[in-house]
Length: 486
Image 1 (spheres, rainbow, N blue to C red):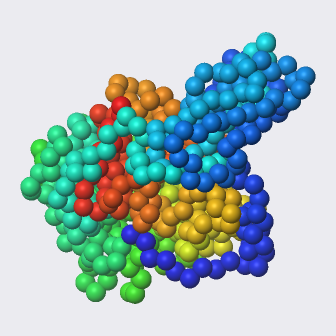
Image 2 (image 1 turned 135 degrees about the vertical axis):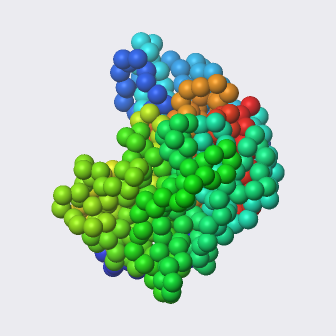
């Protein structure tokens, strides 16, 4: 789903990038949750082992910390990825042991902080490290990579309130998974241009699906000798379409030579509006053109009309009125957190960075002048988290730490409450994946946007969602993997 182009970085941006790569990794210095009115003490506790950027840790590892003399520290607590690692240690020298085999191989963040007799705590002292081994999900979790098989070039999926999954196959078939079984007959079959990254590449269900049965799709339409991406609505009767196609919007004609960067992500927000990620179709300049929908996050009413409170509804004309945020390269996946409406946009990078952006009305994410942490100038919204295509020297020292990949994909906020959920440290967190390097990571927004390895799959992930059963479903090009909680 990604075709790299030529990188372009100004001299000033390159100098800034070099400085960033040389700087300490500030992945997490935040707290692990509220402490009920206690006072944060000065940083008097230091995590002394393992060292920051320790690589290949395996088996039993001892975490140690020291407290400054006369600091009044009576105990030290330790964490791995925001979760407690053993009980507090009240005896200096302070330490605890962990078994790295309990976590997926990859990046993890270790922390230590002290407590005085009154219950006040120091700031966290942190180390970014990498665990070795070959574990592909944390201990206790179950990974079933053959939960649903038989898909052909899958590109996106959405879940209906009744638990059914609608799976978009790039070639034009919208498939239905019901009770864990892929139905033989497609919900609908569309005639599409599936060359490159085109085709049936997006799907969403209406918030009122239970009553109106609306299913929305994003696909590349063949229009004589031209091609354009179209958003349409269909009505479900049982497991098949009923009635004709209702066209919501036809986007402008695509390039006659560039078949990449179509976007395709679609989600309804808690405001009832349809958000659509549209790529730049290989023309980066369009991402900064507010009068053009390419390289943007669009916001539509469910009937395809323009919401009156869109940022540019009154200052632009035509499809520029749909623009909600801009400066994106290829946002083919994003997620909206239920309840809060928080949006994370995954933007596939060129030859250097992959990024997760915080969605905001009117935000400019900088493409094509800015990518990842490079060239973030006044007026540009920097990513929450970015990881590189190549390892830093020393390993783990650049933005993103030990995370290395080529095309960010998927994206799902894990619920904060409900039955049958992942353990507490994963709740409310953002899960993301990489299409080519096939890892699954967790972004911890409560701890300075630290990122932790959660697992990996053998197929190439393109989308993710949390099922009504509490499992994390990972859509790959030919299957749906299911990761269930302990």
